[in-house]
Amino acid sequence: MERNKDMVPVIALVGRPNVGKSTLFNRLTKTRDALVADYAGLTRDRKYGEAKVLDRNVILIDTGGITGDEAGIDSAMAEQSLLAIEEADAVLFIVDCRAGLMAVDMEIANHLRINSKKVFLVANKIDGQNYDMVTAPFYELGLGELFPTTATHGRGVKTLMESVLEDFPEEDQDANKAVATGIKMAIVGRPNVGKSTLVNRMLGEERVVVYDQPGTTRDSIYINYEREGQGYTIIDTAGIRRRKNVREVVEKFSIVKTLQAIDDAHVVILVMDATENVVEQDLHLMGQVIESGRALVVALNKWDGLDTEHKDRVKSELERRLKFIDFANIHFISALHGTGVGHLYESVEEAYRAATDKLTTNHLTRILEDAVSVHQPPMHNTHRIKLRYAHSGGHNPPIIVIHGNQVDKLPGHYVKYLEKTFRRALDLHGTPIRFQFKSSENPYGKTKQLTDRERSKKRNLSKLVSKRSKKNTGRVNTKPSKPPKHR
Image 1: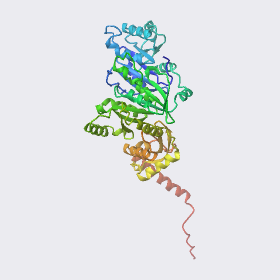
Image 2: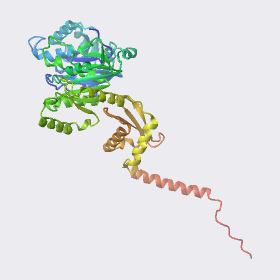
Image 3: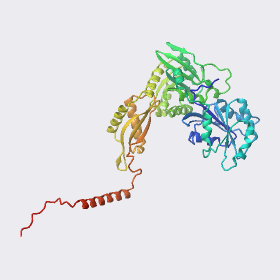
């Protein structure tokens, strides 16, 4: 199936263990703490990370490696790497120039050719070696151009990624407008929490007109429809249609699908299973939504039929564990019976408005001035931190840029106070808020803080200059002259 340009490119890193896959992964994601796919049905052999590469968003998959000790390339030991290849749009096949060409490298290359994926052969660890000598054997793999790198130092990485991203053209904005007829809602959650049931229920409501929309790669389904005059696009990561050959949980719930749906949505509806309380996977997924800056609505499904004691326990658990998303509306629904589903639209529209409304500089600055007048920023080095004005820096999520002096010294509790103040004043429900603080200090002033000794010297020098100035310019007698004495 032809790849949808709107989707974020997915790039898998494969190869033998210790060839530098994780080093390259961490360099591209700019982190040592990559997102780990620790969900039900997935082993920890695959790590998923979002990265900004050459101003492009990409999803990277790091794999545990293929050792060559298995009984063939299709053995269970190599399964995670093979699944990563299946999920990816492109593959970075990494080989070790210090270790040289291995038999398992040939085996991996053969599998990649059969798979018909776009492959980029990365010759890693080239520093301190004769380039022509150490890279020559790898041309036997028959994978075309070879990209020399040293992942630990970043050598050759930019050239590599420029070539990779050439195959993924920038989004066609006109095409996006044609597809995005309204509010994009991503329905995400763990397997078997009722995502597809909820999608079918939302599409089956009265006054809903459904338009056919072909499925995109990796079985994410985009469905455009209209409800009470408002256009919507539902992104169903699980797939509405039944699939015949579902072999394992990973086919029902793919991290790639979820990350792409979150990235492409205006509002995310996170579906949780009320019968199972709040589980760690729900919190991981919720954290990913917030990290992406998307508006959020939480739906506790399968609420009907629970006894009062269980409902009270779930509500208590939500209050305790979901304090960090106090801006999001929580709904108790039954997708199967339709209970409470209609109210989801109210929260989705409210969250969409909050995430996308245009914010004017005058309005934001007035809110900032009111906040400062009620509760001034703290002192730092005997000087009070000053916040002067605010303006919008973007939307979805709303970004508020605040200018002032010593803004990098603002404590976390004051930033939290500003967030609550702006959220209340702007009526921003359902979306996270991002703040950016920029210094407005005199660009011609000192670039560093003076020490007490330096300040003392500066004051003494100023006094000395002042005295000398008065001495040189004080020749005009300003005192009243005495009358001459008469002899």
